[in-house]
Image 1 (spheres, rainbow, N blue to C red):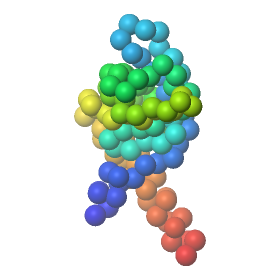
Image 2: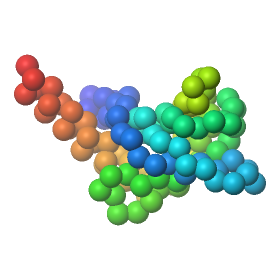
Image 3: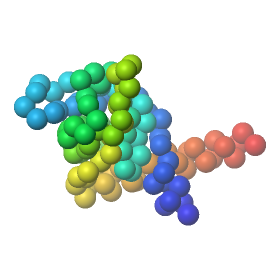
Length: 115
């Protein structure tokens, strides 16, 4: 149950994310949220649905940067875009899962306190 909640948990987080598309120069966007299967970005003009990209990011309190291949699933006129992860290295997957589990626990504790 907790694993399923963590998989669907979209953790709100605003961190710099470096985006590469093929041979184009890398650019920086800002994350809106992240889950085990994808993330949303703002300030990401030029991304199109179907683009295969590489994102590079550093989760708060993480020891190493994560590099993940993704595919753009949606975008809007304001420059926001959502992507699904398509290739996540094992070590990055473990790091992300652990980080999200900690954030979910904090979120659930916050909900319990608020009740």
